[in-house]
Length: 109
Image 1 (cartoon, rainbow, N blue to C red):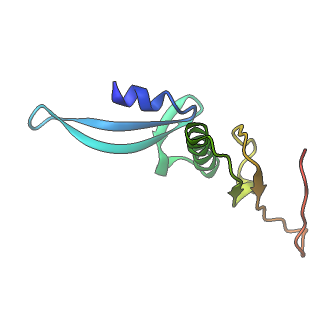
Image 2: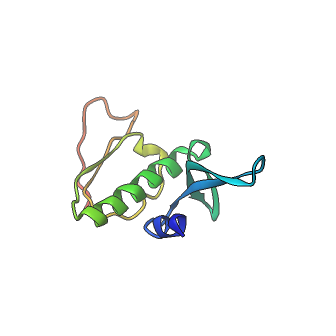
């Protein structure tokens, strides 16, 4: 029930908090972040860059809603994400671009 309650706060991330311990039929505490990748959940470390970035946004969104505090999200390697997860926070994207030799700032509406 605890795991379900916590996971209900997130859209793209789930946390596995307990594992069955086969040696003594008990339960072992753990905390494994799982990321939704095209309908299947994979461990955070096995997700691609876009999945990891969107998982981070999902966690930020959940904490922002809970604490009612919204701050700017800085996203590095933004070029690796085609579609960002929706957020009510301001987003600053850092993108590598071969054509740009000087810093360029774009404002999205």
